[in-house]
Image (tube, rainbow, N blue to C red; front, side):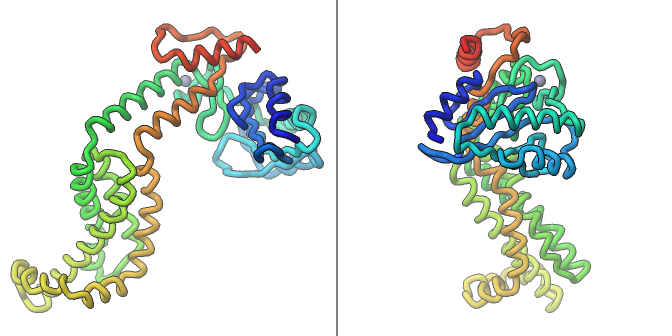
Length: 340
Ligand SMILES: [Zn+2]
């Protein structure tokens, strides 16, 4: 079907339209529908939010019942959504209604209910819906507003007060402290646990954030450099300690004797060659810590604003809003939803 026709058919369901995504509630279940494709598409992904355990048996029964219309995939077991790939070659509205009817009866059979708790405060009694986390969820309008203000305030603070310099200092200290367990196991147990290298990037990321490091596009490369630097500084310190005990040198003497090695490329080649396993774990640690540093503060705000823009009040629920600030987006949507 064409994209234009998809828009017309999702609007006919009174769903809130945001580009290829449409948000609404059907048979009590909050759903997000996404058109797959550009001008023309054969499938749409429907993400249905649920409460209760979604076991293998449920998925088997659901797939049996929607055979020919689409199929459901058991994505992350920890999530609170069921994703269905819907065939929309011959239109969206018909297959969507059919699949949702079958979904609702299978869900009832397996004890799955529409969600009731607000993902922000984990309480019931919600008065609206918004796309949060991995699906369209019931929320309190007040919680969403508060989240927006909180993220906005901390983003402004990070943008105006964050500093790359203090972040680098904090990151380096964090990386070196995180290297201590490795150093100790090597010295005391005389064993190398490469897996401990995983801790170094986490220490760097922690230190960077703790010391008010500015979140910017530079934070990712800084994380890589500081992690490598911390690891090799640690290996160098280890080398100093080993030399000092071997030859009975004092720390000062060992430093002076070993410093020239740092200028010798073959020293570095040996160091890198002997630390391949450590590097592997270091890279894994970087991958894990990457997400916590690389998004900029402005990204946070736009993420929350994207959530806000999907807000729709629950029919019949009283609005909790008391103040008029920051109300443009939501009141605009509320009005739009009421018009439908
Ligand atoms: Zn709430």
